[in-house]
Length: 196
Ligand code: FE
Ligand code: ZN
Ligand code: FE
Image (tube, rainbow, N blue to C red; front, side, top):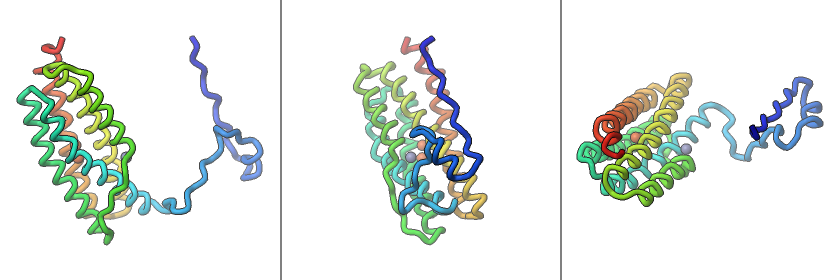
Protein backbone atom coordinates (compact mmCIF):
# COMPACT_ATOMS: atom_id res chain seq x y z
CA UNK A 1 0.00 0.00 0.00
CA UNK A 2 1.40 3.35 -0.98
CA UNK A 3 -1.67 5.36 -0.12
CA UNK A 4 -1.02 7.89 2.58
CA UNK A 5 -3.82 9.05 4.74
CA UNK A 6 -4.35 12.79 4.91
CA UNK A 7 -3.43 14.19 8.28
CA UNK A 8 -6.56 15.18 10.12
CA UNK A 9 -7.18 18.91 10.15
CA UNK A 10 -6.60 20.46 13.54
CA UNK A 11 -9.79 21.82 14.95
CA UNK A 12 -9.35 25.38 16.03
CA UNK A 13 -11.37 25.58 19.20
CA UNK A 14 -9.30 28.12 21.04
CA UNK A 15 -10.17 31.20 19.04
CA UNK A 16 -8.62 33.00 16.12
CA UNK A 17 -5.09 33.36 17.49
CA UNK A 18 -4.68 29.67 18.17
CA UNK A 19 -6.01 28.85 14.74
CA UNK A 20 -3.64 31.32 13.12
CA UNK A 21 -0.51 29.94 14.75
CA UNK A 22 -1.25 26.23 14.32
CA UNK A 23 -2.76 26.25 10.85
CA UNK A 24 -0.59 24.93 8.04
CA UNK A 25 -1.21 25.97 4.43
CA UNK A 26 -3.54 23.00 3.97
CA UNK A 27 -5.70 23.75 6.97
CA UNK A 28 -5.92 27.53 6.53
CA UNK A 29 -9.32 28.92 5.73
CA UNK A 30 -9.69 30.32 2.24
CA UNK A 31 -10.05 34.08 2.38
CA UNK A 32 -13.31 35.29 0.85
CA UNK A 33 -13.28 37.40 -2.29
CA UNK A 34 -14.51 40.98 -2.08
CA UNK A 35 -17.88 40.18 -3.67
CA UNK A 36 -18.34 36.90 -1.79
CA UNK A 37 -21.86 35.78 -0.86
CA UNK A 38 -22.75 36.80 2.69
CA UNK A 39 -26.16 35.23 2.93
CA UNK A 40 -27.78 32.07 1.63
CA UNK A 41 -29.84 34.24 -0.69
CA UNK A 42 -26.65 35.48 -2.39
CA UNK A 43 -25.29 31.96 -2.71
CA UNK A 44 -28.64 30.87 -4.12
CA UNK A 45 -28.51 33.59 -6.78
CA UNK A 46 -24.89 32.78 -7.66
CA UNK A 47 -25.77 29.12 -8.04
CA UNK A 48 -28.70 29.99 -10.28
CA UNK A 49 -26.25 31.88 -12.53
CA UNK A 50 -24.02 28.80 -12.63
CA UNK A 51 -26.76 26.36 -13.64
CA UNK A 52 -28.18 28.94 -16.07
CA UNK A 53 -24.82 28.92 -17.85
CA UNK A 54 -24.77 25.12 -17.74
CA UNK A 55 -28.26 24.75 -19.25
CA UNK A 56 -27.42 27.19 -22.03
CA UNK A 57 -24.21 25.27 -22.74
CA UNK A 58 -26.30 22.09 -22.96
CA UNK A 59 -28.65 23.63 -25.49
CA UNK A 60 -25.55 24.05 -27.68
CA UNK A 61 -23.99 20.67 -26.84
CA UNK A 62 -26.97 18.32 -27.20
CA UNK A 63 -27.36 18.64 -31.00
CA UNK A 64 -23.75 17.48 -31.37
CA UNK A 65 -24.41 14.47 -29.14
CA UNK A 66 -27.52 13.73 -31.20
CA UNK A 67 -25.53 13.82 -34.42
CA UNK A 68 -22.95 11.41 -33.04
CA UNK A 69 -25.44 8.92 -31.61
CA UNK A 70 -26.60 5.95 -33.69
CA UNK A 71 -29.25 4.12 -31.67
CA UNK A 72 -32.71 5.47 -32.52
CA UNK A 73 -33.97 5.39 -28.93
CA UNK A 74 -30.89 7.26 -27.82
CA UNK A 75 -31.27 9.85 -30.59
CA UNK A 76 -34.90 10.38 -29.60
CA UNK A 77 -34.00 10.67 -25.92
CA UNK A 78 -31.39 13.31 -26.74
CA UNK A 79 -33.65 15.37 -29.00
CA UNK A 80 -36.52 15.18 -26.48
CA UNK A 81 -34.18 16.29 -23.73
CA UNK A 82 -32.96 19.16 -25.90
CA UNK A 83 -36.52 20.49 -25.99
CA UNK A 84 -36.80 20.06 -22.21
CA UNK A 85 -33.46 21.77 -21.72
CA UNK A 86 -34.65 24.85 -23.61
CA UNK A 87 -37.49 24.94 -21.12
CA UNK A 88 -35.03 24.58 -18.23
CA UNK A 89 -33.40 27.78 -19.46
CA UNK A 90 -36.80 29.49 -19.50
CA UNK A 91 -37.69 28.25 -16.02
CA UNK A 92 -34.44 29.68 -14.69
CA UNK A 93 -35.24 32.99 -16.37
CA UNK A 94 -38.56 32.90 -14.50
CA UNK A 95 -36.64 32.30 -11.27
CA UNK A 96 -34.49 35.37 -11.86
CA UNK A 97 -37.64 37.36 -12.64
CA UNK A 98 -39.31 36.14 -9.44
CA UNK A 99 -36.25 37.32 -7.51
CA UNK A 100 -36.43 40.67 -9.26
CA UNK A 101 -33.04 40.00 -10.87
CA UNK A 102 -31.85 40.10 -14.43
CA UNK A 103 -31.03 36.62 -15.80
CA UNK A 104 -27.27 36.29 -15.77
CA UNK A 105 -25.02 33.36 -16.64
CA UNK A 106 -21.76 32.61 -14.86
CA UNK A 107 -19.45 29.98 -16.31
CA UNK A 108 -19.90 26.59 -14.70
CA UNK A 109 -16.46 24.99 -14.69
CA UNK A 110 -17.91 21.63 -13.69
CA UNK A 111 -20.28 21.45 -16.67
CA UNK A 112 -17.54 22.66 -18.99
CA UNK A 113 -15.38 19.79 -17.73
CA UNK A 114 -18.13 17.20 -18.16
CA UNK A 115 -18.80 18.44 -21.71
CA UNK A 116 -15.09 18.42 -22.59
CA UNK A 117 -14.87 14.86 -21.37
CA UNK A 118 -17.92 13.99 -23.49
CA UNK A 119 -16.16 15.42 -26.56
CA UNK A 120 -13.11 13.26 -25.84
CA UNK A 121 -15.24 10.14 -25.46
CA UNK A 122 -16.79 10.79 -28.87
CA UNK A 123 -13.39 11.31 -30.48
CA UNK A 124 -12.02 8.19 -28.88
CA UNK A 125 -14.79 5.83 -30.04
CA UNK A 126 -15.87 4.43 -33.38
CA UNK A 127 -19.41 5.48 -34.36
CA UNK A 128 -21.96 2.81 -33.43
CA UNK A 129 -22.74 0.92 -30.28
CA UNK A 130 -19.48 1.69 -28.50
CA UNK A 131 -19.75 5.43 -29.15
CA UNK A 132 -23.40 5.27 -28.11
CA UNK A 133 -22.35 3.67 -24.82
CA UNK A 134 -19.86 6.51 -24.35
CA UNK A 135 -22.48 9.14 -25.15
CA UNK A 136 -24.85 7.62 -22.60
CA UNK A 137 -22.11 7.63 -19.98
CA UNK A 138 -21.27 11.27 -20.69
CA UNK A 139 -24.96 12.25 -20.73
CA UNK A 140 -25.60 10.58 -17.39
CA UNK A 141 -22.73 12.55 -15.88
CA UNK A 142 -24.49 15.68 -17.12
CA UNK A 143 -27.84 14.56 -15.68
CA UNK A 144 -26.33 13.62 -12.34
CA UNK A 145 -24.64 17.00 -12.09
CA UNK A 146 -27.95 18.66 -12.82
CA UNK A 147 -29.86 16.46 -10.37
CA UNK A 148 -27.54 17.31 -7.50
CA UNK A 149 -27.57 21.00 -8.42
CA UNK A 150 -31.35 21.27 -8.69
CA UNK A 151 -31.78 19.22 -5.51
CA UNK A 152 -29.64 21.71 -3.60
CA UNK A 153 -31.25 24.75 -5.22
CA UNK A 154 -34.73 23.44 -4.41
CA UNK A 155 -33.77 22.89 -0.78
CA UNK A 156 -32.43 26.44 -0.58
CA UNK A 157 -35.50 27.89 -2.32
CA UNK A 158 -37.64 26.14 0.29
CA UNK A 159 -35.67 27.59 3.19
CA UNK A 160 -35.68 31.02 1.57
CA UNK A 161 -39.43 30.74 0.92
CA UNK A 162 -38.95 31.50 -2.76
CA UNK A 163 -42.04 29.59 -3.84
CA UNK A 164 -42.02 30.43 -7.53
CA UNK A 165 -38.37 29.36 -7.77
CA UNK A 166 -39.08 26.22 -5.80
CA UNK A 167 -41.88 25.20 -8.14
CA UNK A 168 -39.69 25.71 -11.22
CA UNK A 169 -36.64 24.02 -9.73
CA UNK A 170 -38.65 20.95 -8.72
CA UNK A 171 -40.26 20.73 -12.15
CA UNK A 172 -36.84 20.70 -13.82
CA UNK A 173 -35.40 18.32 -11.22
CA UNK A 174 -38.14 15.83 -12.07
CA UNK A 175 -37.32 15.99 -15.79
CA UNK A 176 -33.59 15.53 -15.14
CA UNK A 177 -34.34 12.44 -13.06
CA UNK A 178 -36.64 11.01 -15.73
CA UNK A 179 -34.01 11.61 -18.38
CA UNK A 180 -31.38 9.85 -16.29
CA UNK A 181 -33.67 6.85 -15.78
CA UNK A 182 -34.47 6.74 -19.47
CA UNK A 183 -30.76 6.69 -20.29
CA UNK A 184 -30.20 3.86 -17.82
CA UNK A 185 -32.97 1.90 -19.54
CA UNK A 186 -31.50 2.50 -22.99
CA UNK A 187 -28.08 1.43 -21.80
CA UNK A 188 -29.45 -1.73 -20.21
CA UNK A 189 -31.72 -2.93 -22.95
CA UNK A 190 -30.00 -1.83 -26.12
CA UNK A 191 -26.40 -1.09 -25.76
CA UNK A 192 -24.43 -2.81 -23.08
CA UNK A 193 -24.90 -6.28 -24.56
CA UNK A 194 -24.30 -5.15 -28.15
CA UNK A 195 -21.23 -3.11 -27.32
CA UNK A 196 -19.41 -6.13 -25.94
FE1 FE B 1 -31.45 20.59 -17.56
ZN1 ZN C 1 -21.26 24.57 -11.80
FE1 FE D 1 -30.58 17.59 -18.25
